[in-house]
Length: 295
Image (cartoon, rainbow, N blue to C red; front, side, top):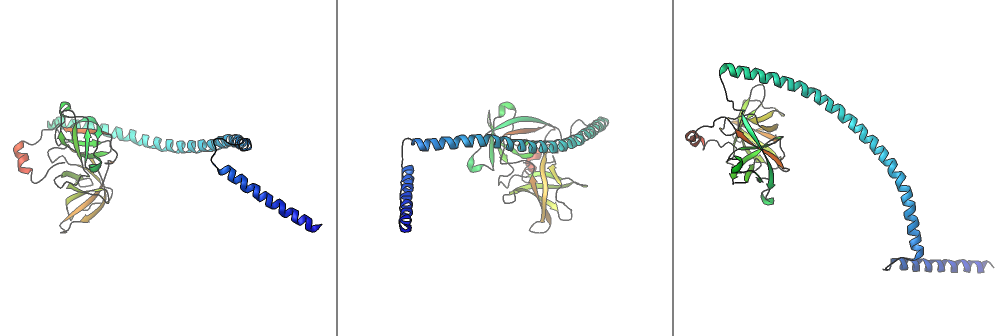
């Protein structure tokens, strides 16, 4: 009797394995539609998943909303703090502008190197092979655009107008590897330090400010703006912040690496800057052309 039950169990096991293999083979073959047991199991599983997923999503969404609410609260506090500082800065700027205008009236000065007119434009083209060198904008001669005008974004200077057509213009970026492009710049501090933006370090993604005297102390984080002394750009356009300083190859001057304020990669809306103060006459510009080309 025990031998009979043992054989019976073995036969049941073998039959079960055969049936299982057959079912697996049946389920793996290509079919136009499922059998009713498979369809029933899939429908049942889908119904159960649907019933479980809805409460799970509701719970997960509730906790995500709580997290978003907490983040919004923290951001709101920070924005309120910044807003209070902004109100204070606006009041200070208003007073400084008032004092400045009064002093200019007393001295009889009508123009400064900071005077300029902005003209909004949109980037309409960019060559993939020269992505870091040139962009095309939708404004040209008919809009008053001229060669060598400064081009900025809300975060800072990005380049200059290189060529002008009737309805479009080409802008050369600061990241272009062109040794002829030089910008007269100021490193702001207790005492302003003058230098020239010459070149771009692709590895560090930084502009190079050269011709800084070796005895001058330049610190990380100092702000860099245009000086307005090149005769083309107005003074005070944001360029970036110093991230490193190193001596040049001869040790007579220093080179400051400046992180640009603007993003040269992602450009869509830009502003072309027209300097309103009279530029040097062409004879003077011709004499200085070999010494400095203002970008």
